[in-house]
Every structure is written in structure tokens, then in C-alpha cells.
Image (cartoon, rainbow over all chains, first blue to last red; front, side, top):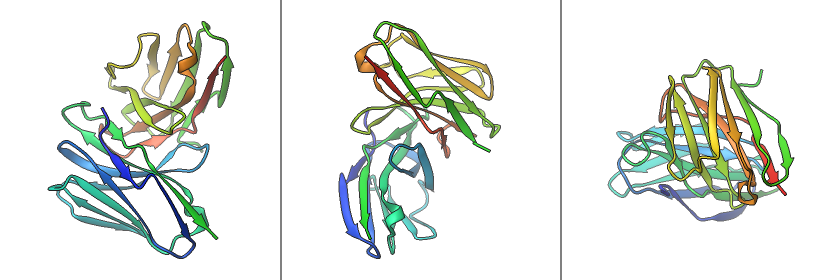
Length: 113
Length: 112
């Protein structure tokens, strides 16, 4: 079953601007992860945030998690053309998927130079 | 060195054929996975394999079967291929269930 839902489905910004993507999920989780997928490539892990954490940073990435609202956001600051990719959130649905990751549909980010 | 590798990268075949996709990881991970990504980029888990325990997504047809000759390999066999099987298939691995996953480059399967 679909767990994560990203919003927006597509986002187009200029280089240097910040990009914010949101993810909502349905069940209890241990952690939430964000992945990036460049066109024609496999997914690359960006960051993992545990259910007892509220915010996490990694370079130009900032992830927040609100377990009461079952939502997360990924902020990419000072975007670059190389950030153009699809971004997916994934959660470990302990009940429905026996610990497997359930991915959302993704946000397609386009950063124009 | 490639962490998770898949072969072939492209696979074009006729309906009704049987085909296999190979996956190898050199990360020493205990768990491996197969995903299917459709034309709308939706990524769906098909199988996970951990210490000889196989977890199957109940929506996956039994024409699909994973085979693991050892901890570093999880191959995907598909029998009687159908048009709807056309997609990109990704192999992945992780040290533990629910943890960070490392993905292969994908195999684009086209069934004619």
C-alpha cells in the first residue's frame, strides 16, 4: 500500500533558490528516509531521520519530521543545477510491510541555471 | 568499485519468454531487495531477502521468483513475460531491514 506521499509532484526553481518538498505518511514508523534519483539512474540515499528526532542537517539538506502530523519536509538550500532530480521519501512501515521501505511517488525538482 | 551491480542494463524480449536479471553487492550487507519502477516512477517493493528469509509482496505474481545463491547475490527470474512487466527493475541492499539502502543502476525491461 502507498505509504509516503510527496508534495508537490513537480517543482521548478532558479539556481540559488531554496527548494522545499513535503512528505506525508500513514502509519507508525521507526525512521523516514529521503532519496534522490537522477534520470536513468538508481536511487541514492540522502538522509535518515529517526522517529525520535525532529530535525536533521546534512550539508545543504535539512530534514524535519513531525510524527504527530505524520509528515516530513526536505529543504535544499542554495540549489544548484546538479540538484535537478526526483526526490523520494521512504518509511519503514513496521506493520504493513514487515519492515520494508515504502516509497512515495516522488517530487520532480528542476533547477534552472 | 560498484557497490550494487545489476546485469543486464537493458533487456528486450518477447512475450512468453523467461528471463533473469542478476544482482550482486560487495558491501557485506545482510539484506537484499528487488523493486519495480513503473513509467510513472512509482517504486514498489517486490521482495526482500534476509538470512535466507524471503518476504514477498503479496501483489507480485508468482511468475517472479528471487534466487539467492549466496549472501552477495539475489537474482530475479521471470517466467512467461507479459507486456505489463515492462518497467525498470532495481536491486538494492542494506545492512538491516528498514535501514539505508544502496541501489543498483537498474535494468530496463521491455516486453514486446
